[in-house]
Length: 153
Image (tube, rainbow, N blue to C red; front, side):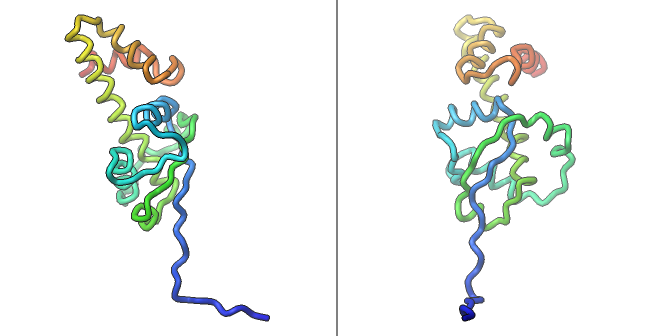
């Protein structure tokens, strides 16, 4: 027997995604925001705001090309808020959080260095302490890259 279908209900939007991410960003996000997977991305958090921005951005960007995807060696499982799920999320858009969160990671690194430098701690040591605090190893984000970021600023 044929069951009647209700054509007035909208299909439920998917709200759980496993997003490819830089390994250093996964560690940074989990420790900095004191969360575990799956990470809820509510709009009152910086991460949630980055996810919402990525979902609302309709530009076709080349920064999510194959070279970037090849470096995304880790994954982060996120649970979108209802509002975010209503934005029609796609993995291609969610990968953009790598770009935005990497900027926040670097801002945190530079603030950390500046704070420790005021206490007389050398820049290289401050970089090493930051990476150790987030358990980021040399393959994920090198001490040399952190030091050069400080020098370029």
